[in-house]
Image 1 (tube, rainbow, N blue to C red):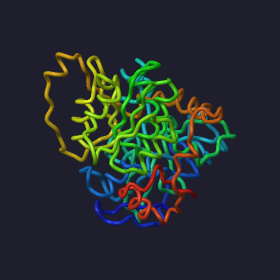
Image 2 (image 1 turned 90 degrees about the vertical axis):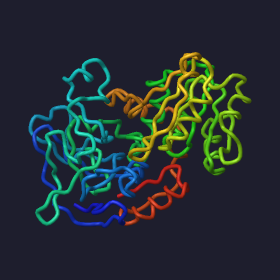
Image 3 (image 1 turned 30 degrees about the horizontal axis):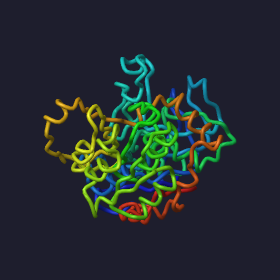
Image 4 (image 1 turned 120 degrees about the vertical axis):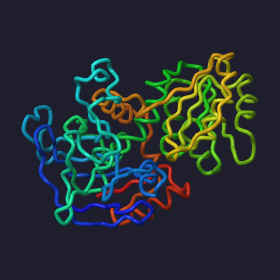
Length: 363
């Protein structure tokens, strides 16, 4: 199989022919149709996140067709169309059984391994690691069966690819993590691929106003097209002051969809009394910010994390597909540009420059 491989953080990716072992028990082999270009992969590639094992095939957002299944797999078969989830689940640990499978205790985050602690890819007889348990920058990949979520075959697979991470993470932060009620005010800090979907989640639940905050005018225009009611250019004015001016008392919910610690401080400062700040973006390793605790206590404000939009993937990913098919969720409008596998480095450059809503690698 052909894949784009990261051999060293900070160095360009290289397309290589890799050996791919077939699926073992409880696993499936998927022929990839498309993969989103995600900021988490950029952070892994440029060295912002430390400790990424190499060589590694990046990509944690994709969709494709099942080619074969391993022993014991009963719910999937060859020909099924699937969205890949970077959060495999065991179905039996504490978090799985209480309905929070995105926190499954059996997952091995950051180690580049499948749930059984091994890899399926090799180059020259040496192991190649899997990013996010799925490794979608590859023509084929082997994943745990819980990472392959069957969907309606009528759903275009290139659009379905984005449901696997950015759509789920953004929309889920609103619907699942924050459970924003109709009429609540929202502000979204960072309107890249995930932030645009936070905006869409707010529009789905009739939040108002929905304030987009960014430093790039083109991104703000994109957010307005997807449901934001106001735009604040944080390079020109204090976003917290602007949000208080628009809402009168601060936002009921703020969402930080960018891996930037100072933005968390701004989002917390922009909260109304009783408000909640939902942190989605993961900053570079070791980045912190000072927090004045007094307003949190006296105003009963809260700061919470949201991983993968608190996803229950077997339920939520097909539901998002249905919403797209019903015209309630926009995905086509998220896609800024399509790339071939050999253009992964250019896709990363454009993402880092803020030129993409979502880039898409197509096979």
